[in-house]
Structures are given as structure tokens and as C-alpha cells.
View 1 (cartoon, rainbow, N blue to C red):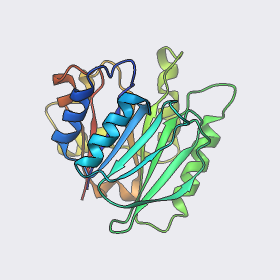
View 2 (cartoon, rainbow, N blue to C red; view 1 turned 180 degrees about the vertical axis):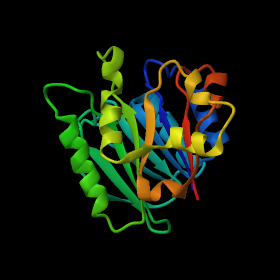
View 3 (tube, rainbow, N blue to C red; view 1 turned 120 degrees about the horizontal axis):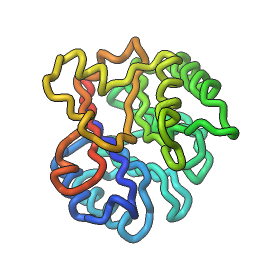
View 4 (cartoon, rainbow, N blue to C red; view 1 turned 45 degrees about the vertical axis):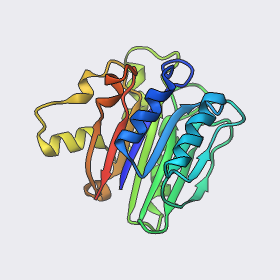
Length: 228
């Protein structure tokens, strides 16, 4: 199963509407996560076009036209558990599952460190949830909230995730494949991340950032995962 995750930062970086649609079509993923998606007029055009080409199953976490995570899928999926409090800028996660594929994907807006949240407790709770699941695979696909964060503080939420037992898939897959070209280092602003628990990381055959986004002028590149 091919999964595409993309922080399109709609309304800021996402000015070429057809460029976004073309990029999604060229990758031909079975499941798409669009982070920072706005369900406005342009957003509805994206949804309608993607539905016409086979992404029949859709779910949007946002409230009205506020930004959120849009899930587009060619496969029927179920909301296994949702503790997202709308709008989706809340620090919750959305768990989706498929009938014909034993994978649970947690769509997350990765919280920044602030006085309003304890990141350690948040990720410990998420890790405990993944341990009690009855599916074989559990993967996090998230976008990091970096608004108002500078310097080393940007990486603190990522450290919290790694400290609670998750493996960062871009690093892991590139290290495993000993790739000579490390594409993600070329990205000036990386906001998309994917993690897997240690016991299921081998189910991900590859993880990489696509160059199609930059070729079309987008500031942020789509992240692609291939599940064996």
C-alpha cells in the first residue's frame, strides 16, 4: 500500500491548485493525508477532483473552513478511535483502519512544547494505546507544529516521540538502504514525519520525500511510504 502525506500549508505555500492535484495524481497513492488543509473553495475542488479519479472515501478533521487533516482513500477505512477535538489544531490523534490490510495509521498534529501540554505524557499515552491494539501494524503520520518555535525547541517533540519507543521511518529506511542520496537533508523546512513502533518498522519497505513537489514549485515536498 502506498501512502502519501503532505503538509500543503494551504493558503500560504499552496498557490498552484492544479500543481497540487497533478502531484497527487502522479504518485497514484492508495491513501493520502493532507495536513494544514483548508476546506474552502479551493479545498473542495481538490476533494472533488480526487473523488472523480478514485479517492471515494474522505474524512476531514477540521471545523468548517479551519485547517485540519484531510484523508483521501481508494480503500474503505474506519475511524477506529478519534480523540480529535475540533478544530484539528488540538493535540489529539485520529486512528484509521482498513478491512483488507492490517494496519492502523494515527494521523497526528504533533504538539509543540508549551505550558498547555506535557509532551512526555502525551506520547507515553499514545505509545500505550498502540500497545493494546489488536492489529499488526501501527504507524504515526504527523505534521509538526512549528509556529512561534525557534532553534532547538523545534526538535523537542520529535525527541519525545523517539524516547517513547518510536522509530523515525525516513532515517530508518535510508540507513537500511544505505542510500547515497539523502533527499530529506535538502529540505529547508521539514514538517512531515512518519514513525513506527520498533516491532512493526519492517513492514515499511521504503519511506522518502518526493522531488515532484519541488519540481512544481512547492516549498514542502510530499512524503511517501510503501507498506509491504
